[in-house]
Amino acid sequence: MLKILHTSDWHLGNQPSGYDRSVSEAYFLEQLKEIVEREQPDCMIVSGDIYNLSSPSAAVQKMYTNAMLEIHNTCPNMTIIVIAGNHDSPSKLEIDSNLWSCFNVFVTGSIEKRNDTVDFKRHIIEIKNKNRETVGYVAAIPYFYIRNYPNLFENLEEYIKSTVDLRLPIVLTCHLAVSGSEIRSNNPHVADMEFFPLEMLGEIYDYIALGHIHLPQTLKNSNAKARYSGSPLSISFNENYPHSVTVAEISGKNSLNTRTIDIKDNMPLITVPKESGSIEEVFQYAETHKDSLKNCFIRFNVKVKDFLPSNSKEKAIELCESIGAYFCTFNIERKSNDVQKNDKTVTVEEFKQMSVMDVARSYMRNQNINADDDLIRMLSYAINFNQDDN
Image 1 (cartoon, rainbow, N blue to C red):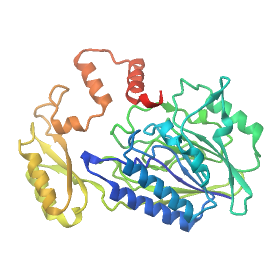
Image 2 (image 1 turned 60 degrees about the vertical axis):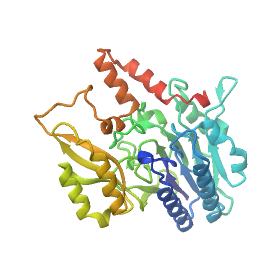
Image 3 (image 1 turned 45 degrees about the vertical axis):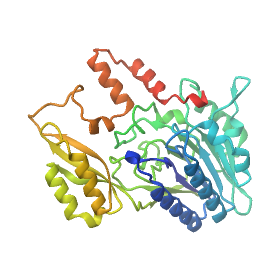
Image 4 (image 1 turned 120 degrees about the vertical axis):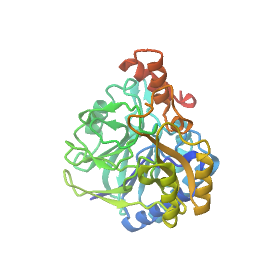
């Protein structure tokens, strides 16, 4: 049997409205260590987006390094596989890969070619159990642009068929968006994705460990084999659903069982209240429920006729400080039949919630520029272009 702990999209270093979130992140990593200690898996897969920024701070990198070493010490026989996501710097993630391999941690940041052929050997990791018996294989594919490697998965499957023991479980992990996936977020971390059809990934895998989409889900039409573990913490206020990690147990070919283990957040992102109201009603609600809002990052859900009062932000900060919470932003809902929101009348708080692509689309509409699919794809590529790695 091959037992896998699947997690992804940690986004370490995420700072809602500039607030440090290391307390929540450290709490998650401690929970992850406890899960590893309890489950004793053969393999832990981190399916990309370890960091929130391609150049994380020294403190964030140290937190990650210390946590990975503690997790390794908790289960020394476990193989740990880490792939780069679109938020990670491939070169920076791989810089210590030789050192990490001494701790049974295999890091894959980029796809490399030799003589114009992808070096698939470096992407296939053999998994051994505590008795040092081979119990399966993981094909690790980091984030990439399909136009650069249009036949990557097809060629990968052919390579696997010719090099591994096909009687053992074979797992694919990759960081990408699959067509038909459910997304419940409008933040820039998951916006403007390039979608891959599920059938493109291949058919020989007993489990497909996916990263990139933050909502935990098993994909339809995948025979329950393809799954997003989702982010362990909410990255934006719109991700107000349970977060978890996934345990996948493969007991022979075509025999898969998956279950989830919930992750708790000791300093969650909360929208207050769930139903919008006037700013006076919203502030009164927060005052009444202050005990449950302590140590939370707060977005106030406000309904307005046209614009917020000029001193709203100052009052929100003062209120949150008095109850031991952290004010982040307003979620503004305009009353129907009043001043209509358009691209030229956006408040500062609304602008803060817009992604780079939202701003680009707004500009193009105002300039009467035809934003066809090709232009949107080029803009998305430019937005996600990592100068350090290209």
